[in-house]
Image (spheres, rainbow, N blue to C red):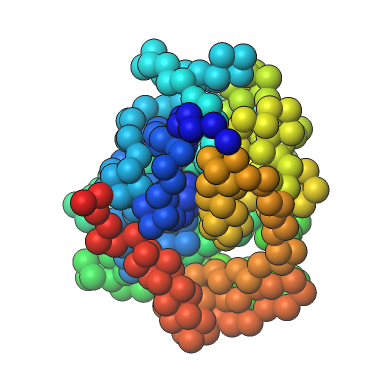
Length: 391
C-alpha cells in the first residue's frame, strides 16, 4: 500500500463521530490525518437532553467537549458550519468561505425538524434542533418564569412523536416544579400554565406499541397537557398564533417544533445520492452509494438496505463500525459491512423521575426503576469522554 497519508475530514460532532474520535485516540492510525469540522464546541448527547430540560442534569452532564476530544484523537479542530461539498475536487465548503480539502469525508451533522413548508414556522417557532439554538430559547424562558412566576404562560409543541411527547412531559415537569418553589399552589399552576401538544395523527407516537402510546397519552392528560390530535398546523402567525387546517387557532407564548426530521439542502445539491427526504444514502459500509469517498452516519444517513428510524441509539451503534472502516481505509484493507439491529429498546423519561420502556410490541412502566436504569446507561455513555487529553 502507499505510504501517503490520507486526509480524513469529519463533519459534525454527532454521537458516531464522538465515538470515532475516542477510538482514534485509543488506537491511532499513522496513515490518517484527521480534521473535525463543527459549528459548536459542545455537542449534546440526545439521551440526556429531556432530563436536562426537566432539571435533572446540568449542561456539562449532557454535552461532550469536542476540542479536547479532537486533541485526544490527534485531530485538528475547525469551528465552522459546512455549506457544500465539491465532489469533483474533494473540497468541503463552509459558511465562512473557508475551503477544506479531503481524501475522505464523513458526515455526522444530525437533522433538523421540517419547518420550512409551514408559513411562519421559521419566523415564529423554535425548532428542537439544532439543540444549541433550542437551549438558548429554553434558558431564556426559564429566566422569564423565574422573574415573573405569577404571569400566565401558554406553550405549544408541534409534533406527537417520541421527541414531542418526551419534551412535553419534561417541560411540564420543570415549569411545574419552578412554580411550586415560587409558592404557587397546584390549582393555581393548572390555571396559569397551559401546555398544548399539536399532532396531525389520531394517535401519539405511531412507531411504538399500543400499550406505550396509551400509557403516555394518559400521563399527558393526567398532567394537564392539552392534546390536539388530528390537527395539522398550516401556519404560524405573528404573535405565535397557531393555525390548524381544521380552523382551530391557539395563541402561545412560545411554540416548539418537534416534527419529522429533514436534511440540509446542500447535500442533494452537491450531487450526493439521497433519499426522498434529502438524507445521504449509504451502503452497508456506511459509504455514499454515489461517491465512495464520502461516509455518513447518524440521523443524516439512510442505510439503503437497512432503513431505521432517526434515533440516537442507531447513531451510537454506528460509531464503532465507522471507526473500523476509516481505520481499514488507512491501512489499505477491505471495508466491512455493518448490519444494524432491527429493534431498539427505547427508555422514555416522563419528567417525574420515572420512565417507560418500549421495544417492539411491548412496553413497561412508567416506573422509577426504569428511570434509574436509563440514568445509569446515559451516565455510563458520557463517562467514556471524561478526562481525555491529547498529552
